[in-house]
Amino acid sequence: MRWTAWLVLAATLLLWSGNWIVARAVREEIAPGIATAGRLLVVLAILLPFAFSGLRLKLGTLTSKDWRIIAALGFTGGGVHLGLQWLGLHYIPLGERVGARQWAGVLVSFCGVFLIATRGEPAKASFVFNPKLQLDTHGYLAVLYSAIGSFLLAYTGWSYVVKRMGAVRAGVTMHLMPAFGVALSSLK
Image (cartoon, rainbow, N blue to C red):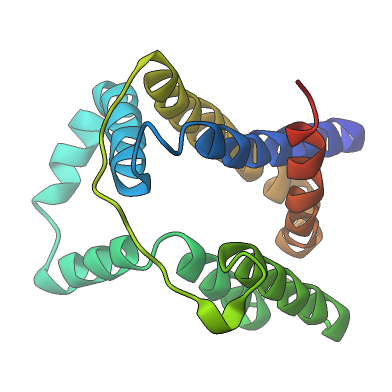
């Protein structure tokens, strides 16, 4: 069963890394915000029929404090959530502690992501979000891949792996994604 967890972990990291390649390939067809919203709508359309009855029962029991927490969690998605995830793993008693080497790996990873985002010129950093939407077949397929591959399948795989390997052991492998991304981008 341990080899199965490692294979699922590799597939999960490949699916997430593939999302970067797909997003770059269609960057002229669809804006990142539209792609993200589209992927969430696809996932919602897939999962809602299975979760609607249970969700309907829970919605009525939520307090205003619960709604504030849900809003905060929704707001802090993406990169911020990853940082908070690592911070939480440091303090949540899971029987494993994040050591100095893992924290160094996280720091190196964040620096690498920042350098990539600024195209190697951090002093000239400017982040622009374009509201562009010119979807063609490739754009639609990219949103579907992102929703089904890197969201549904990858997060299901991630849950499987964390349950079997532990959060820390699985978490430190996330820094392999840039290498997977480079390998995937070299395939034609």
